[in-house]
Length: 91
Image (cartoon, rainbow, N blue to C red; front, side, top):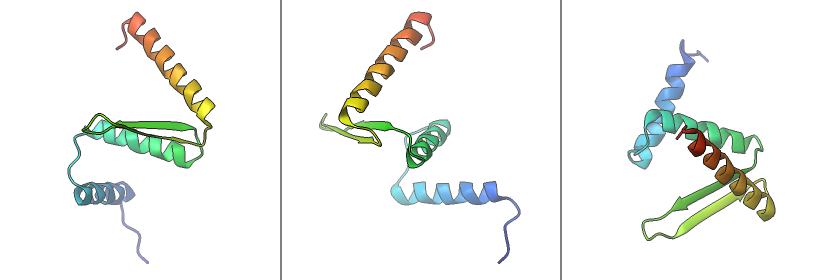
């Protein structure tokens, strides 16, 4: 089997293909990359909370590798961290 010269190009092609198959993305390329990093972290066993608001304002959510209590604690940390950044002017 022959390996391609530039594996980064191959990976970009695979990601672009998977995005085009599922439709276009409204995310900026840097946001797509960040989201992919987060998914990899979850796959590596990190705790996570994912919340999506549907068009009808219904929330869909999932927490992975965490109990409900841990998920609530994580949400509290997010709120606290965001509040600190806002106070410091780092929005």
